[in-house]
Image (cartoon, rainbow, N blue to C red; front, side, top):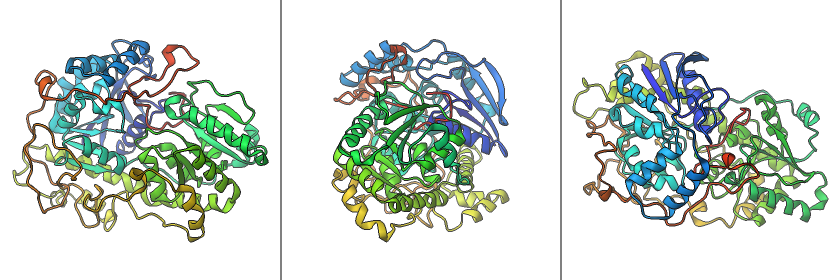
Length: 560
C-alpha cells in the first residue's frame, strides 16, 4: 500500500499528541508499506512560522514532504475573532475567514494533493481542525480517512466541520469517548470507523534515584508533564496545591514538579518547582518516582501523559471534566479524578497516607497498558483498517455489501494477522479489575461526581467498541441520542446491529463552493469558551482561542 499522511506539523521535535500519533504510526507502518508525510515547514503551532526547509527529507525511514506556510498567525486578532464567532450568529464565510486566520495556510500542499492524489491508495488526515484537513479532504473524499483527535470544544460546533466529517469516508478514533462525541455531533453512523489509539511499551524500571539526585526532588512529590498554561488547567492546579500545603503542614517537603513548555507565570514557592524540558528517559524516571502524575486539563482526546504514567506504574490524578481521562481511570482502575478542591484534597490525603494504595493503582495501570496499548496489538489493527478502507475504494469491488473478513481471506498476510487477533477485542478489555484491598479507600474519594461522568452508559446505547465475535468494519445504526442531519431522510430502525461493512459507493463530495450557508446552521455555542487566559509573555505567545490545546504532549520534545 502507498499512503499519504497529512498533518499540520511533523518531526522528532514536535510534541503535540496528534503529531506524535502520526509519527509513531508512520515509522512503524513504513517498515512494510510506503508512507509519505505531507506537512508544513512550521514548527510552532502558535505562529506557524516557517522554520524547516521546504522540500523533501527522510526521517527514520519515512519520506517527509514539507510545504511552506503562506503567512504567520496573528494571535491577538485571531483570539478576538474567535471570541466573536463562538458567541454570535455568523455566516459560512465568517467561518472560512476564521479557518484561514487560524492557519496554517498551505495552498501548495493542497495543490500537490490535487495533482498527485492518484498515486496513493489512501489519504489519511490527522486532526480535524486545521486548513490542510478542511481543504485537503475535499480533493478525494472517497479515499480519505480522518483521525479527528476531537474533544468537546467550541470549534467542533462550527458548521464547516460538518463538511469535514461528511466528506471523510472512514474514521479512526483514539478512545470510545471521542467516538461517541463525534457520533452525537455528526451524521457519520453509517461510515467505516474503528477505535484504536496509540501504542505504549512497558519499559525496564527507570532510575528513580538518579532523577531525585539530579533534580533535588523530595521524597514525596507530584509531577505535572505538559504545556504549562491556563488552557491546560495549570492555574487551578497551582491554587489547589498551595491551599493543600497550607492546610497540611504535617506533610513537610511535599513538592509539585513541573516539566514542559512554560506559557504562564509560575507561583514563587519552594514547593512548586519548574524543571524545564527533560529528555525521554529523565521524564519517565520522574514519572516513576512521583507519588502521582497530575493532569488538570479538561480538554483531552487521548492523553499520552496518562498512558505514560500507567506504563511506569504510577497512578494519575486527573480532572473529572475530561471524559477521556475519566474513561482511562475507570477502565484501568489506576487513577482518581476530582471536580472540586475538596475532592482534590481527599485524593491526595488517600494517596500520600497509604503507600500500598499508590502501588496497587500503579500496578493495575501497567496491566491496563499491557492488555490494551501494546504496539504488537494495535499496529495490526491500523494496518487492517487502512487495507480495508483502501479496498473499499477500488472500482473492482462488487456492488453488494461484503464483510471485510471475507474479502481479506484472499490475502495470506492478512490471514496471519487475523489469527494473531483471534478471540480478542481490539484495544479493549474489561480491565484488570478492582483490587479488593482498595475498595474501601476509593469509594469515598471518588464519590460525588456529576451524573454524566459517574453513571453507566444507558442500556439502550451500545458501546461503539467492537464486541467479541463482531466485525469491526460493519455498519451500525445511530444511537438514540444522536441527532440526524437536517438534510438526511429519517432512517427506519434496523434490527441488525453490526457496525461495519464495505461502504456504499461514496456520495458526491461536498466542496466549499457547493455548500449552502442557509441550509446549515452556522452558529457556535451560545456560551463562548476560552482555551487559555492571559500570560506573562507577549501576545505572540498566548494560547490561541480555537478552544483546542493540543492533545497531551510528549514533553521530552522542545516544543509546544
